[in-house]
Image (cartoon, rainbow, N blue to C red):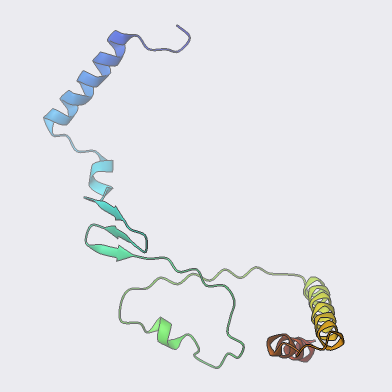
Length: 132
């Protein structure tokens, strides 16, 4: 009633599935599926190959020509995907102005409180001002 299968229909489906498996018919799913998948904390093993995903955010402070050379010429199969989202120049400049203001305020607060200025903040501010 209302989409529920009767007990006889369920038993019939199970017997039909068992008959198909018993006949040795192979479906496309059987051909594509790996023989086993092992999930570990650091990696994934499918059949006899290991897989690992690394998520890297950001870029180095200075980039030279061929800065990805050692990664690209790695001796083992490696798939690299880079996602770069286009952004309006105005939005980037507005965000940079806001960040510059934050860094300047942080440095000013450190000086007023008599603390040493954080060198990371100072270098970041210098880089941002150079880009502006």
